Length: 126
Image (cartoon, rainbow, N blue to C red; front, side):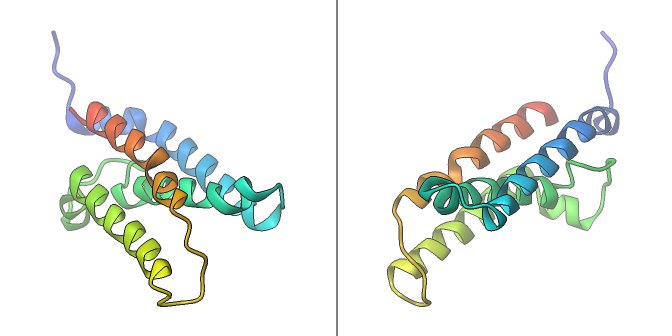
């Protein structure tokens, strides 16, 4: 069985990650432009934002690169950083550190797409 290089495998899936980036980014930004109710305006950006940024930070949407950025933002490290940031933002809302509305459902919204993307990334990068 022939061995596929890491670059070839990454580059094969890059167009699909790019499509996901566009879909998630467009959907998230649409929540600002279109009012479709409480779930749409309250949770969809919380669901799509971390997910599209995960694809962006990991460089999954573009051709393979081996550099300081890609070495630092490994799949696990990126997930951990994003979880800390998302949960930190929500915790800051809980403690009224800035004017925003705390919603405990946002914790679930943050991970609802981010965790599946992380698992898919791990699977495809093996």
